[in-house]
Length: 60
Image 1 (tube, rainbow, N blue to C red):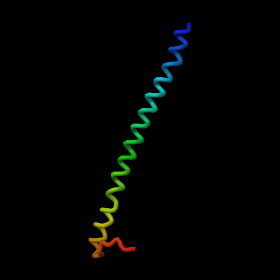
Image 2 (image 1 turned 90 degrees about the vertical axis):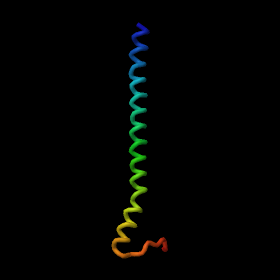
Image 3 (image 1 turned 120 degrees about the vertical axis):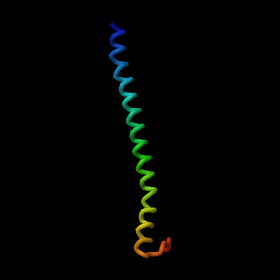
Image 4 (image 1 turned 180 degrees about the horizontal axis):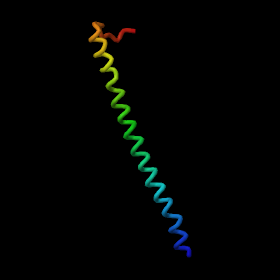
């Protein structure tokens, strides 16, 4: 009986750790995609400014 109880406890624990690992991988992937996309945004804005004839400047 103790073996069955230990198995009944260990299976959800292992499944929980696997699920937690999967969530971490997905969140990191989404974060990397968002970071890469955000890095492209200034390039998009500078292209739009140059097309409108504005000069590119970092002046405040």
